[in-house]
Image 1 (cartoon, helix red, strand yellow):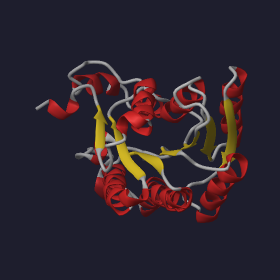
Image 2: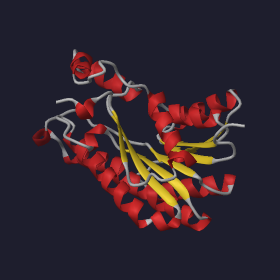
Image 3: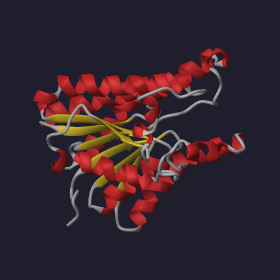
Amino acid sequence: MGKMEGKVILITGGSSGIGYATAEAFAREGAHVVIASRGEERGEEAAEAIRNFGGKSIFVKTDVSQEDQVERMVNQVVSTYGRLDFAFNNAGVEGKGARLAKETMEMWNRIMEINLKGAWLCMKYELLQMVKQGGGVIINNASSSGLGGAPRLTIYSASKHGVIGLTKGAALEYISENIRINAVCPGIIKTPMHDERLQTTPGLEEIMLSMIPMRRLGKPEGVASLVMWLCSDDASYVTGSTFLIGGGQAVSV
């Protein structure tokens, strides 16, 4: 039996990158994994990939910025598996890397709708279910940019600061309901989103590596391992905390 045998986890943005790495890790430990994302084809492929190695997974097409879809997503998890033990609110977008005064209202709305409003909506319906069932764990994917500034990603950074605020406030509000809420803050992780950014900015990877004391990029599997620990009983005394996974970025001056 795996460490997460029989547990149910919902992962938004679960079809690629950190989300998929987390889905695969939990599935290999026996969890029922619900992958949610906007892209139906990729989401179905991710769930099928997990089933192909013997894992248990379904896909639910969801735009986390739409309240009716988020409510339906959580309802589908509960109607399928009867409960929701863990939620990893991972869906997010980054933006195009413009200086703040050059950003548009369209980009502001897109980033805030998905990153901040989406996290709030997911937490809202996850919490309603977890209160009803007597407990659970929520992990929000913030970012190292949510702990400091991020030039040319200022709106993204602001949205992730907001996610950390949601995490800390909700953790205090629901601590008496046997619900733990924490945030992971990945630094520079090699994901499809990262690779897309490199294609548009020549030389960017060398600049990024120079900012990391370990001089290497992080792996999605490393974030997945932390999420799993935070969901486990080994982290039963941990709530309202943020965890930077940045290869030493926090201590570099």
